[in-house]
Image (cartoon, rainbow, N blue to C red):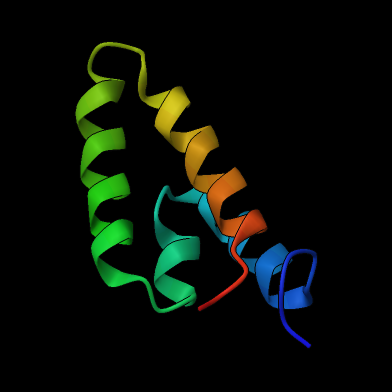
Length: 66
């Protein structure tokens, strides 16, 4: 059973902790991964990238699949 709290989600959350969007990429959600990566990179210019960075981690951890 894969869902919230599964090992895959924990690994995805850890991956997103290092690079925003990497966890979503590991879960196969390419468009969201690219969106989070680009948005976080852009917002880090204004010191607001941490918001997207944390959203990326939480989103990867809470993913339940289709």
